Length: 75
Picture: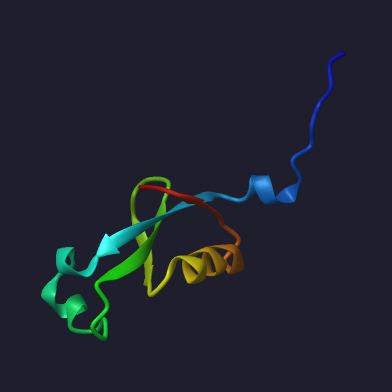
């Protein structure tokens, strides 16, 4: 049997990648704004452009979904 599966509207959203970023790897100007955190989470477009930096992974996923992106983990 040949079945076509409809993944729904969510799968038509552009993918963004969420990955941890060490604060020590960021420019000094950004490090000064982190409030002492050692790690942030970056949201990147499929072409690698950093779209956002946030304090935790859950927030990164929420932010992506609120902006009509489909977030996935990247290491």
